[in-house]
Image (tube, rainbow, N blue to C red):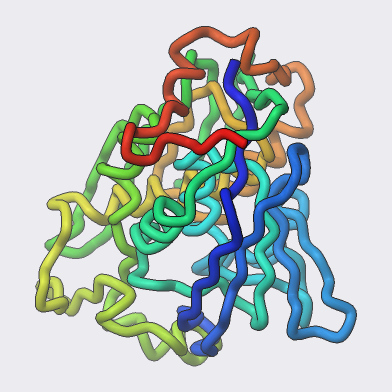
Length: 306
């Protein structure tokens, strides 16, 4: 049986919001089984709590936002991806601003922090969403599909009219170990020619070469270059995992995306939830061995039992 997980103790992180440019501090607390991932805006008088759920997603332009208006929490996707990647189901994130810190633009800093903090196994079985029949969403020439598979597989294709990116495809078979080594370090990216337009929209106020890959018309501008030859599509997979984690459970199914983004990922989650015949909720103890074994942590990150 594979049980739910939380943090072994509270951990604190401080950093800049990519889009808001505001310095924020976030305290991540252990919580009980079946609590889920929740964000609490402690800078607001009534300290609203938002559960990380596909139905609470608001804006999806250049990030995934939970809620709306003054209570919203922006850019949750990288942190949620790391929680899913490490099999962490239950955390309360107290945050004193509108946006999760961007760190270096990837999930690597969060992996390091949570590894140092430790992971606690709870006395309650995980549940998996097992996909039974395909569901698909399309917006113009972009699409995303979820179909049956014995474990989480993501087949992602991105297309950019840029000589460094072009068309990239990667098929990723999920495991905690593979997530840490292949996906967590891939950084967000943007084109220099889009910067003025994005800033006019109130976005990327905190963006820099320290927290994103930036490309001019011909090449990568970061002095350290790329971490992977195909870092761009790997980051898309990081985003996809964070966005589909908003289904609230581990997933046994294949996600295929073409030119997708946060909006399509959210539409796909909602389409699945609105199609009861397309999935069932199954206890980890009833699942095939392959899906459960994917959530075994590497030995250096073995969960602590309490």
